[in-house]
Length: 76
Image (cartoon, rainbow, N blue to C red; front, side, top):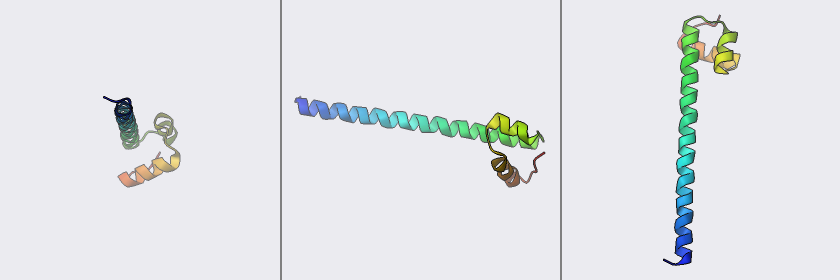
């Protein structure tokens, strides 16, 4: 194998690894977001105070109002 070919193979491996890492990171972020949404929905159904929901989910009040509205619920 020539040095040039070996260098190209190494670059392709590094690129592949970077893409895998990026995919894993993106998947983890989506999972965390899905969990936050689920928690917010559960807390809204349980009529928890909006400030408590915001504290535990990190969502702003406006976002929580949108979620509640989509669920046909109101915030306490």
